[in-house]
Length: 114
Length: 113
Image (cartoon, rainbow over all chains, first blue to last red; front, side, top):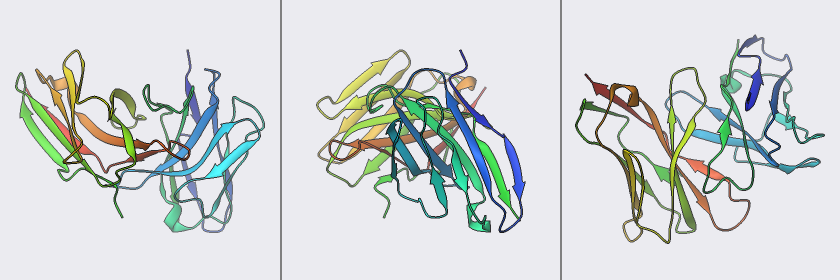
């Protein structure tokens, strides 16, 4: 009963490097999301997907890319990392819109860009 | 432009007493509201939700109240327990568009034994 699994848990990147944050869910949820949380702030939506092959931008998409080739996986790609991308990243999923039963979140990836 | 506001960054309550966490919103299109609880180094977990057609929803020790005219909701925890110490996020969803959740900044609740 894994739920939403994120890897890695921690990562330090140098400015200009790139990386992929992995997210996989085993609940057969159609909807998946990427959020970031900066210190003292709420969660802000980066990208979301309503099903395999369909992705759309959230509130703060600049500097990121996503793909959704399968129902289970929703990787987040950072190209040319910048210090402003230092944050905790959360992946989440829901069976439908998640409005009444909420999202299931992963445990997060703490990223530092130096 | 903060559409969901949690104006109290922190709250301390004695064990056994009531905890009241508040949330205000500005977008009149929001029609579903949720509360999440987050422990350090973990992802948020869903706690309770309420539709705008209701003004109250209960689940055990947790009750959410919605005042649509004031665009205000609150989460009551009775009685508070030390294990309730966490950050609580209020979130809202609009009935149009993609139904994305918009989160507040969170309130850190400390329940003192």
